[in-house]
Image 1 (cartoon, helix red, strand yellow):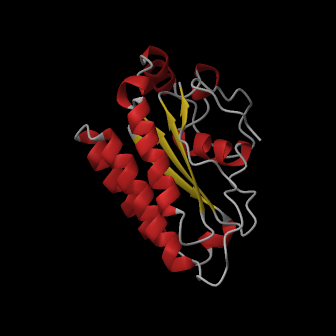
Image 2 (cartoon, rainbow, N blue to C red):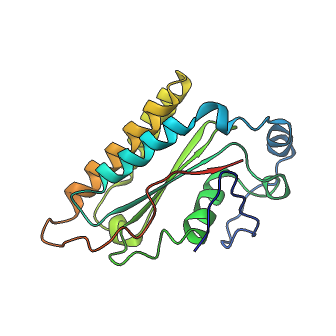
Length: 186
């Protein structure tokens, strides 16, 4: 379990072996990026996102974890892209370790304006990639319009709708396995 604070930093290496082209251009972009996560997401925005996660998780056993990162760690960005980073955080934050294999990670990288959704194997079997791609594109479109809070809240609610269709209502949720608060990384 990862204990989170206002400026949580994940310092381990990616645990997946994916061929990714090293990129000096990506490294330079992230190196020069000014941390602005707090400027885009105030405390009130974080509370609104937390409430949206709680509401989106209400009717099913699905678990949603939101991670917002300003830029990739400079030590890793040369070899790691946003998809690899999202998968790394999915593993390290234990999103995969839910009772019904029902974890979903919504990862937003502000520097590259990219959104990744990583879903657990229990959900992956019953959903299509096109659904998740559409949610990502909607979030990216709202981020481009500088509607940061609305983008994340709407994305979370859409993920909740997908999970609501997937999971039957016969299974009762025992506890909240992942926290509802968004994790804000530098």
